[in-house]
Length: 69
Image (cartoon, rainbow, N blue to C red; front, top):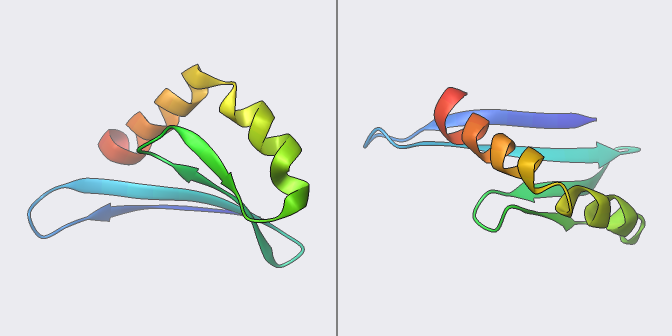
C-alpha cells in the first residue's frame, strides 16, 4: 500500500510525505531532506538501495511533495 499526502502550514509553507506499507505494516518512507528512503523493515533494504540510487526520481518526488501537491 502507498500513502502520500500534502500539508499546508499556517504560515503558507508546503510539505508532504510518501510512505509505503506491506501486509499491513510500515515498509519504506521517503525523507525529503536527504532525498533518501528509510527502510522500516529489514526486507525493505533491497528496495531502499534501488530507490536511493534513482536521484532524478527522488528530486522529482521532493518537488512534487513541496511544490505541486
